[in-house]
Length: 155
Image 1 (cartoon, helix red, strand yellow):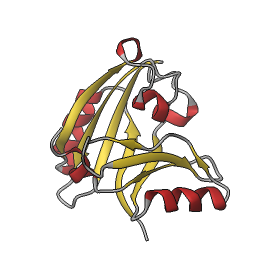
Image 2 (tube, helix red, strand yellow):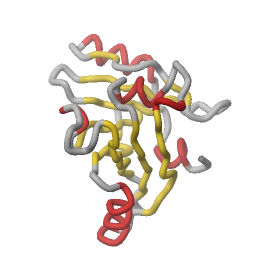
Image 3 (tube, helix red, strand yellow):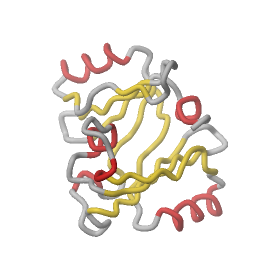
């Protein structure tokens, strides 16, 4: 039905966390780090659609394990890490790979959840789509059409 591709984790220092996860667990950088500054973005922006318009500045990186499961680390800079909205503390979303993105969104909504963002294509010309949804309990579930490594390997 679905499989886990990565977990998102908020950290106070992205560079320190990259080093720690590499040393302790052998995670390696797959893509990034990426910087986001809302002041420099277009009106229709994927980061703010996914994270919320209160996020003005952040950094993130995709780390990969040897088993193919990733961790996406986020350093929220504005607001600061010790002041983030509750939805950005610690583990704030899981990501699942689904066969049919639209059907999965429909199931989420049918069973009391919500679609939180638009559907985004992260690689022009490739079937690399994602969307944020929410379960009935407020947990964010990101849905991917492909694995993290396939979606971000050539970024």
